[in-house]
Length: 193
Image 1 (tube, rainbow, N blue to C red):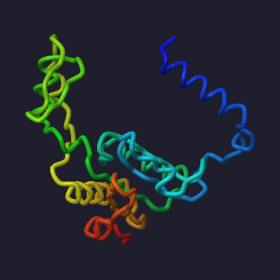
Image 2 (tube, rainbow, N blue to C red; image 1 turned 120 degrees about the vertical axis):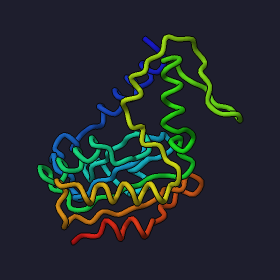
Image 3 (cartoon, rainbow, N blue to C red; image 1 turned 90 degrees about the vertical axis):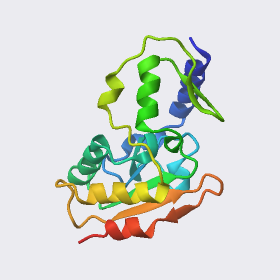
């Protein structure tokens, strides 16, 4: 058993020992909202949004981007589980700002091993074989954080399966302060109609 696996299973055993009333939480989120945010390990949506288990849906992916799958999850969150407000929350110092689609495709084409980065950019740290399958994916990289929040809120707002009466708020989480900073143009684009 790896050290990480052992640590996770030990932590889970402790969690289970005090699970108690959590077994009775209903499936729909109690506070009726959802957050789409980044998978970055520095972000803890439960803490920065004041959540307890059962309060809200949290959908995470690289960059907190409004991918087809993220929108699918938001639509299910609303249609079947009753969320009535959505937040799109990107963050400062995001890894998705450090590369482009072309860089990612090039790295994957030369090797499937983990890459490294230094002051001169991204480099493969392993030998091939690679794959060109990465050419078929839009990696949804970020050039400008406020712009990407506006793009994602707008993409969600304009999706044909998203009801017009759901407000969608746009924010950027500051990894240096913990503060949520509104992107007013995004919130305006996501206003309920």
